[in-house]
Image: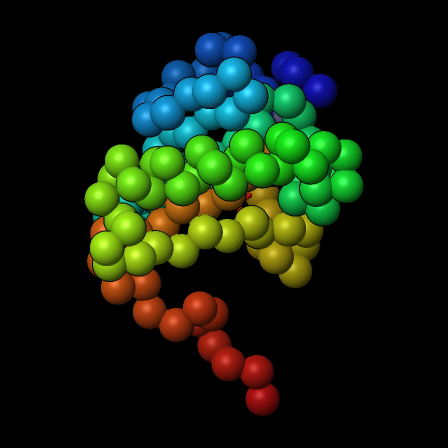
Length: 119
Ligand code: 5GP
Ligand code: ZN
């Protein structure tokens, strides 16, 4: 992927980001348009389009993303009150950037899981 992918460009250092944690395989940085007091994106450095492709392609890397998200949640003081971790996937999921990313959200009550109920 590389130059066409926004998050690959952040991994490459071509686009600045506020990085809060980095491992050999993952990067965590603050969302540019935060939806909560804490809103961090956690990505694998290697390009996968979405969580389904990542989970199918590399189980260890999937686990690395989750472990980094949990470590950031602890760093940000979210373990006591809780947080939300989500992967928007595909058009119905509202995914806009097609480099898999976990949204780590917290720091205040987040309200219902979805803006509206079914039915
Ligand atoms: P999605 O809708 O794909 O799940 O979420 C993409 C997220 O990436 C959005 O929350 C958006 O604010 C964030 N985002 C888009 N462009 C940038 C950027 O250049 N830098 C950072 N840090 N976040 C971005
Ligand atoms: Zn990418």
